[in-house]
Image 1: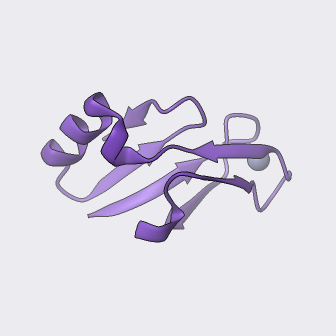
Image 2: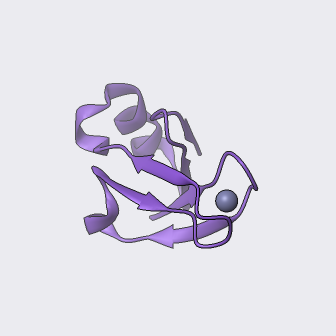
Amino acid sequence: MHIIARCPRCGYRWWLDATGADRRMRCRKCWRLLRVPDLTEVPKAAEVISQAQSELYVDDSGRTYG
Ligand SMILES: [Zn+2]
């Protein structure tokens, strides 16, 4: 499974590794501050992860897109 962060401003996407969760980071393109949620503490996200077959998107409010 891959986790992909998606910037809500410019839509730029980039890969995250497991250590990318639960910390703030900046979009690599437009430098908007993006909060990457700790997925283990977001039940809905965890559910999506369990169903995701290959890719998972997260945004700065903790919503996920499988
Ligand atoms: Zn951006």
